Length: 102
Image 1 (cartoon, rainbow, N blue to C red):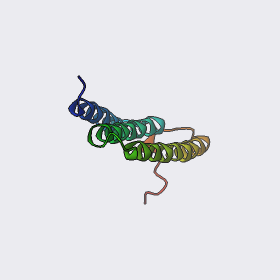
Image 2 (image 1 turned 120 degrees about the vertical axis):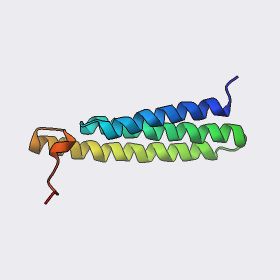
Image 3 (image 1 turned 135 degrees about the horizontal axis):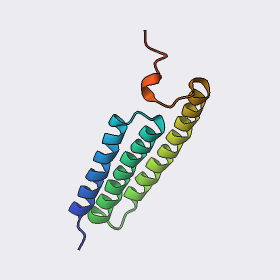
Image 4 (image 1 turned 45 degrees about the horizontal axis):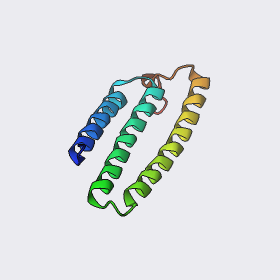
């Protein structure tokens, strides 16, 4: 039987993989994908807590939908910025994005 601990462990592993990808990757698109992975692990936690703590209410699902909406907006803006930077610099390497350095 799958318990709340199984969901939490799975979400923690997913979050750790996303965090590693966001910190270790140099490609901007890979960093965006890692952030999405971390947001999906948060959605798993929200829905799992809702299922096990208050199964008759839908608050966890509503919060998860809000996270999905914010994630979609973040990806749209992020990809637009990355595409514009790629057109100007011909690279998506994060280390090359040093316009604001002194």
